[in-house]
Amino acid sequence: MPKVWMRGPEGGEPKEVEATPEILVPLLVQGWSQCDPPEEVTEDVREHS
Amino acid sequence: MSANIREILIGFGKGKQTDIATANLVANIWQLKKLNAALANPKLNTESDAEEFGKGHEFATQVFKTSWDIAGTIEKYLSSDIAAWAMAFGLGKVVKSGATPNFTYTCTPLNPTADGIELPYFSFIEQIRPGGSSVIDRMAVGCAVEGWTIMVGSGPGRANSKINIEFVSSGKLTEPSGITLPAATVEKLLPSASLTLTINSVDYVTNKNIVSLDFGWKNNIRLDAGFFPGSGFQSAGDATSGAIRGRLECGNRQGSLKFVARFASGSPELTSLKNQTTGTAVIALQYDANNKLTVTFHKVSFSAAEVGDTDGLVTVAVECQPQYDATNGVLSAVALCNTDGICQ
Image (tube, rainbow over all chains, first blue to last red; front, side):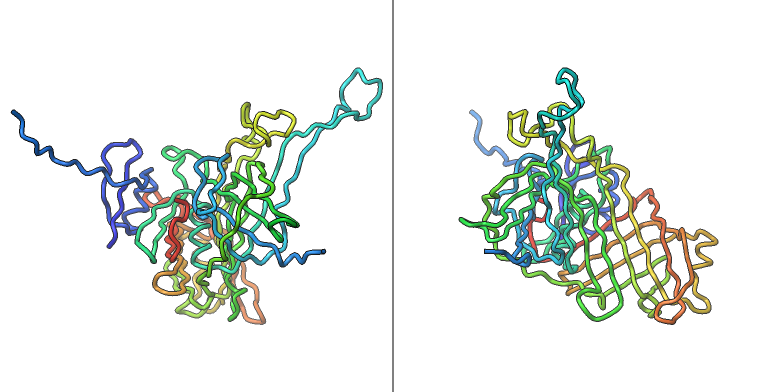
């Protein structure tokens, strides 16, 4: 099942959910909207002296 | 040389405009065929100085451009592509999922608290012989869907599954359009014979009783409120060119659902009306597994049920009253098609 990223009406962290109407419709009614996936954070592997 | 009205080409934004005044780019426009001859003619509203004192008479000596109106209707055989477009632009809120070539658009009406009341905008192009000697070549910028109606009837032809889409515009007009329309999209039709329909727990296809069905959505767009101080002019910065709208917002929205079914002993419609029974109404039309429209009214009761006849057989004509369900709202639409980027 495909997944999509959604963000709540108050903003905050996006959430990945299954793209089924049973899940999406209640979220849309509550004011959630589709958003881009969060940018991946790359771990800083440099050595610190 | 005179032109045949059947030469008319229409194209419109498959994707949404970035704002009401910025036209769709050509890459985001598609061409589809339509059934109606009516054009979206721009209407210039004017006013005169007839009422002003100081002229010595009651006649006009000057006419002023006041504002512009553009509205139109797109009548089409129902396809998965236009269904997805109408649901997304007409309801206003959409989630796209899936991947090439199979996409799913899950659509609901706007939540005014979270989403506001401004609908997504698109550009609408009409052309007859575009190019050096065009008959008509114009683009209405900043259009929004006023409403759509899907009509499903009995019979084998394409005309038994149609959609009418009404739209209104900011009034902004670009002439010539400057757009070279792409080839017409090959649509996947959703025929009447594919219907599945369950209303208030009754499967009207399995019991072979459904005769016809109409359902729709209307945004009742606040046209007058589109003009506000600073809403803009037909020619930017030219106060004599007539005002255009700076926003198109939905008013009191309405869903509608009515159907005609054969009426026999044990048919529940009159009892459901009397008891004001509530339930869901789920309507689906399909071309194949990847081209399908499912519209769900999440809570309906019957507001009228009148027994009559259709072709000599006893039928009941039912009007439903869509209600707001606390979890799922009034209605939702899940539209599957092969077209990417609708209302994106």
